[in-house]
Length: 332
Image (cartoon, rainbow, N blue to C red; front, side):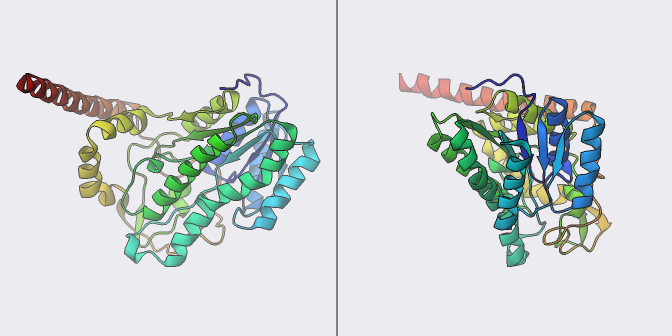
């Protein structure tokens, strides 16, 4: 695993930087001394981000573009390299999602989710890899999701896209072994981004993230840590992260039972909302900045839930161990 403890002077392209994880990751990287090239569809939002970065003493180049348009992707990389003389880090953060039952989602929503949240990563990776190979080093850092290793109702297209993207990243890591080019991933839990404020929904009710919700800065700090020590997959949350992965490994029926019975209800409110397209095909004015309207879950609530899940996991593990001992005794 490579180490780059000092990020000062490195150049990073951050996609999806007009809001959420992309925005906050750009801010945190700038604080660490990284020179930024930020891109998204909303020029006015990127200019606001640039102003914040400059206030913090950083450098920031704004390049408006759409990750689904190959010409835009190539232009962003070209302008970044021309401006800074190279690029060291790509943070793939652009993503969209659409809420609805799979058989009721418009087909164009499904393909668009893949085009942005999966193929957008591929396009930018293909655009920067020649530069990485030429200079003998580089870092692809992908903002993934806990849904890349799990699932949730109403988000089948997004979950599938994230599974595909994580599988691609793991394969790419093997292909790039020994080249000096590293691949990292962050498995993101539900975070307080504006994604839920501009995502389309077929349900006619306001969507919300699966609780608990973490502050978006949790992910941004993980991005900086991975930028310093690349080549890993980070799971920055405990309750809706490492604990859930461990519980799913020993008792997958728990998650299936909870999400199967309550998952749809957990992701919708009673607030009526007509938003059939949201920001899926065209950018919208709302939802600029790192945080959206859904606040992070209070720490004491997460702590209480953690104790409950830990007790459940302990009971499951204890039951499994007892069963194994009984089988061993019976076999004697």
